[in-house]
Amino acid sequence: MAKVAFLGLGVMGAPMAGHLVKAGHEVTVYNRTTAKAEAWVAEHGGAFAKTPAEAVAGADFVMTCVGNDDDLRQVCTGPDGAFSGMKAGACLVDHTTVSAKVTEELYAAAKEAALGFVDAPVSGGQAGAENGVLSVMCGGDEADYAAAEPIMAAYSKICRRLGESGAGQLTKMCNQIAIAGLVQGLSEALHFCQKAGLDGEAVVDVISQGAAGSWQMANRHKTMLADEFDHGFAVDWMRKDLGICLSTGDEIGASLPVTALVDQFYKDVQKLGGQRWDTSSLIKRLT
Ligand code: NAP
Image (cartoon, rainbow, N blue to C red):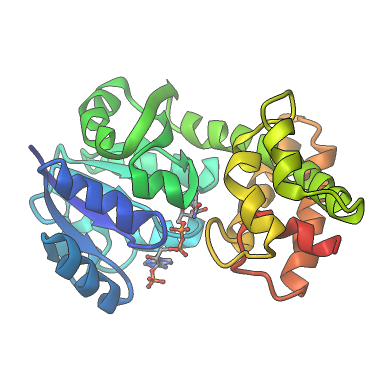
């Protein structure tokens, strides 16, 4: 069993860190809003610290799951950041969805400080984190990945190294590109179904077992039909991710017309007040 620090107890991080305790690891958490860290310790045990540097003292592994590029920089290399407190040879595993650029930057800084660094964004949503069945897509040195994989097993269904540093984030971009158009298609199908006066549940029961079936259909149709979006993966985060996909697409010469269009649809949802709504709220633009 390892000594692990977990930084960022949001929708995803809190349950992931909880699985580490259940797996028997010695866990210390840090959250920017300390009240959440206190509540987490009351529920799961372990310890909390008031800064990333304090939380990582003596840890073998440090997991991060914060918001965007700047948040990750702050937690890793900012004042009282994780890198300043980690012992030589320890490994930072980043579960945040960020750009390949910040990953490259932090990987270089980690190596200079004799630390491991694995980019390891996740897919599977809030339910995947709570049930410990996330898909984890990794990039980094083989030795760092091999050391970190058994720790990530506490909350993953599949965990794989896709290549050198940055390959995990590039894989997550493929994931988000695949989801964007799909959620719009699902929204249009359910909108059409309601306008046609059909029974939404009955329709999904049939078509989900044919070629139209998807994770989004299985896990989101009920709440979409019920007009409920106060859960899951926030629209603001999706726009961050699609922005990363689109700028990387420009850099590498990949054409992403539907992704660009759906990104603009999410902008409409933000204007409706849906910044924190689940991404399935694309249907709100249609109703
Ligand atoms: P969230 O609920 O908004 O939580 C974000 C966490 O990051 C909070 O603990 C927040 O602290 C912390 N944080 C943000 N900025 C920080 C900063 N500058 N310094 C220190 N801590 C900071 O987000 P989430 O849904 O868990 O998502 C986290 C990451 O996972 C994002 O990159 C997201 O794109 C990705 N992701 C999310 C999902 C999903 O379904 N939710 C799925 C896959 C990937 P406070 O509590 O103080 O605000």
